[in-house]
Length: 272
Image: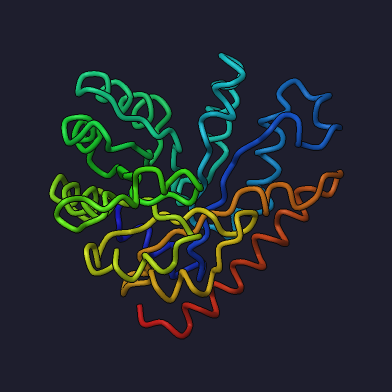
């Protein structure tokens, strides 16, 4: 999916919502366990209920890999269920030496046909560049995450007075273009978004942490939006676990719609 296609979807739906498809077998409604593939049935219902309100879906690979081969089957069927005009993000956080990264890239871009994949940049350029060799695909680099442990390394001040995450962004932005690279920036750190926008004004940012993690949608939107929207705000648990009964999908749809309405109002007052 190209940048213009993504931007058109955002304008059409008046939304920059990304729904995280993180199906925990211990949390999905119990009646689904009677199905042959409970994870897929859960995801199928969530997608059907939320597809009109979001522009991206982000399955976290851990929730599928934990079930071995059956989990991969669930993931493949889930991806096939997602409409073609919605961005699919494999939240895999991969990153390894060049030839290994190349195989990871083939897995997510060719075998699973995802539009984007999250990568860890710790091993440097040669661990990320193989992902950039696929036209029309997106590489989403971890920059500043929303977890507490982010302070262990990401916010460390270096000898050049920059933080480590700033160094990562400044270095990696030269590896590709704003049509290829996005960055993960946690919603729990809106104060950092203004600074990040001075470094990468044109790139899209994937922003997790709204909903269960307490990120403030209005604050992060004010800090992160650019003239092509430039942000995808992810919500996972607050949507997919909005209810635990047979009405779980309807509840997920209502929560996704609630966020979309807020986003539409924000976009109305922002120049795109």
